[in-house]
Image (cartoon, rainbow, N blue to C red):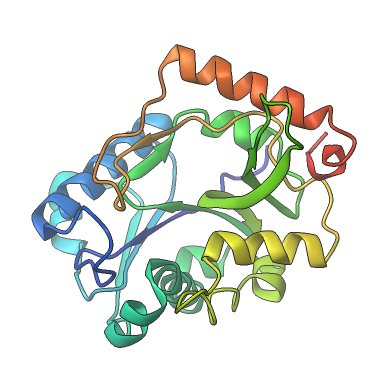
Length: 250
């Protein structure tokens, strides 16, 4: 049986992007600890790597709340002026780069899961069952239920699975020129990478069930039955569209 990938949780206890709603450091720490707890509920054997880009060291509090669990804690100081200029997508890209360069768990892994801190994926096992040894993510499509032409709007970067070499070759610097007046978001950049490199079978067939608190909104995501049914139907309709079917994992 293939070993579970380490799960990288990207954190910034100090919100350097002033556009986000959730700014209180205490709340951001609390919600991150909640996500760690929930990830361990998903699978107690997971190796977690939490990397904070605002200099906060989770080591002591994590050891106190989750003793004898495989949780690696990294921290460093992101360039605050650059994050303010380019946005949280830039900051997250720098966090991932730091983690890949310094994490013991990631160093010894061929692939990893990335999830924004404060969130978790309830159907993580189902996501792993689709692994294609390359890259898997979710994307948002507009006008799926209307008479307008359906469009691929952006890649959802809250959670994805990535072969480490694939990430390094295609996505490692995707954040470098995001933001600014009229600039692209990190979600736009990931979409651009997928399309420019004609990547196929890189979207999850099964809809993700993401829970937790969004830092941008400061609110819990709703994943009730009605929403899950709608997302499942949305996914099925887009997969059957000849313009997009090649993007979905089979």
